[in-house]
Structure formats: C-alpha cells, structure tokens
Length: 189
Image 1 (cartoon, helix red, strand yellow):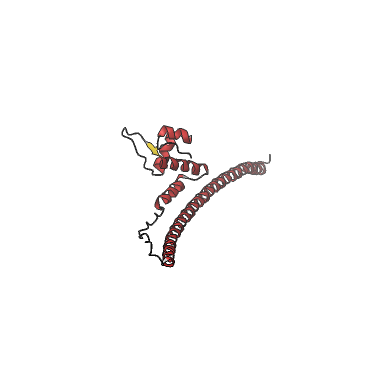
Image 2 (cartoon, rainbow, N blue to C red):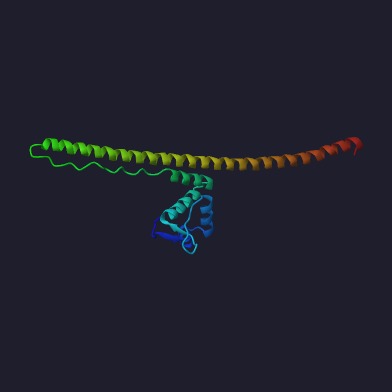
C-alpha cells in the first residue's frame, strides 16, 4: 500500500482500503490493536497502523481466520530487528614515515574488524527475518489446514444428512408395502 500521509482518519483509511468503518473497528478489536485517539477522542491511524490494516485485509482475502492473523501480528511484535552495534574503536593514527607497511596492516586489521561486525549484523538480521517468515508460514499453514478441515467436516455433515434423509424415505416406502402385504395375508384382499 502506498502511504501518502502520516495520519489517517478512520473514514479516510476505510475509503483507501475499501472496507467499512465497522470492519476496521472489528479488526482493531479482534487483533487487539491499540489505535490512538486525537484530542477530540477520534481514532487516527499512523502509517504503521494503516499498513497493518492493509496486511490484515490481504490475509483475510487469502482466507485466513482472524485468530491466525492475530497470531501472525503478535509474532511480528515479538521479533525485533537487531540494531547495529556502534563502532567505538578509535580512528587509526597516521604513523611516522617509514612505517607505511605497519600502517597498512593496521588499517586492514580495522577494516577486517568492521567487516566482521557488519557481516555478523547482517547474518543476525537475516536469521531473524527467516525465523519470522517460518513462523508466519507455520501459522498460515495451520490456519489453512484448519479451514480445510472445517470445510470437510461441513461437507461430511451435509452428506450424512442426505444419506439419513434418503434412508428414511426408503424405509417409509418399504414399510408401507410390507404393511400392505401383511394386511393382504391376514384378510386376503
């Protein structure tokens, strides 16, 4: 979603997302989102909250239940992106003439340390991102399986009702003909 403003009223956001105000309030309640209010007590949505509502809309359109979406959003809040470690090492000093080789070694050593820190930071960042994506995938897969099971249970329930109805009709039909046969045997007509 393209964010154009820092704050949106509920009406502006509902128009932008093509959802009703009621739906936004429902998502807010079900997903336990803390929506700030202005001095007049009206809701306003920050850029992050607007993007969160857009993500909820997308996940709902993919068929996810609100319980699963809530879990995904909670997982996103639990994981935080690691902050880069500030470099507190002092800048290298320029050596006296004749020690250029040592100066180059010192500079390369410092570059190696800085490079190692940045690689470590990127690896941690990537590890957190992958962990978050795996958790989301697990939750989405669980929600899909749950939805499929619910649909299958509904289909089976309808099937059993149809079979039960057909069996009842068959019994009524054959019970009447049996009664007629018994009456015919007893009375002869």
